Image 1 (cartoon, one colour):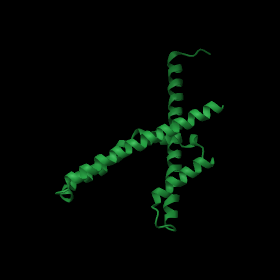
Image 2 (cartoon, helix red, strand yellow):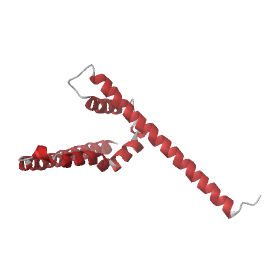
Image 3 (cartoon, rainbow, N blue to C red):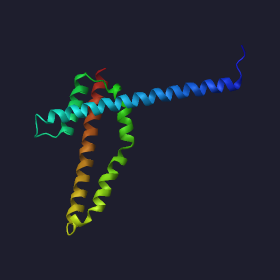
Length: 144
């Protein structure tokens, strides 16, 4: 049986579409897992009203990852996707801030000061975290 170029191209396209469908399904399932852990945190926050549900969800996710109950490979693609498009999640807050300029009347300098200080603190926290994690990784690799 002779395989023509057109049949070969159609087969390759079909394989690519199947891979794409698999990756999309995998991404959706990983997002469902992350959202499920979030809602677990929201549910627990009804019993501990002092701590917000989203914070409890993040703590639960951290506990699951550190304990090995959840492997990072099970949520890697979803996390990469969310990080890639993170800027889009800030658009509604920015638009809301622009539409509420009357609330900031007379406090523009204070608001700008808070934004600058918190940005610097986030930079410092990020640099410190990266330095600590880099040292831990280097120490772990030197043992192996």
